[in-house]
Image 1: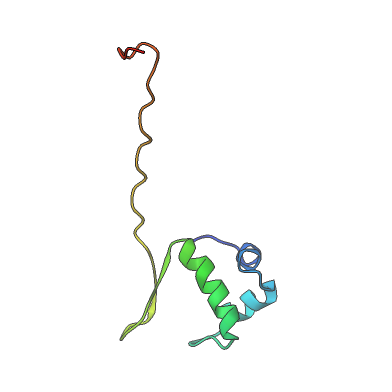
Image 2 (image 1 turned 180 degrees about the vertical axis):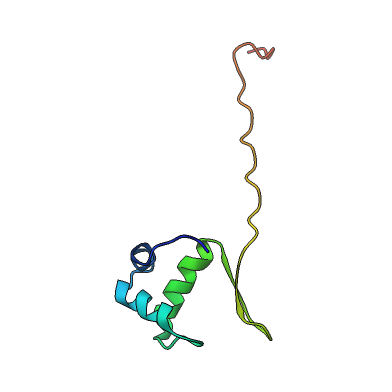
Length: 82
């Protein structure tokens, strides 16, 4: 979904690569320490993943706002007086 490799996710979350590999192998609920899950979830959320709950748990890509254009810079010949 994001194209982040296991090694990169592990590095960003500061967990072992084997932990990420094990998490990905689970069917259904992931069995892991709460602190480890929180670290991985935080990295994924910063990258644009939204975790869904309720009757249909899952994930989706969050819609990110469009980047605003930087303000125009004044030039020497813009008509302003000093």
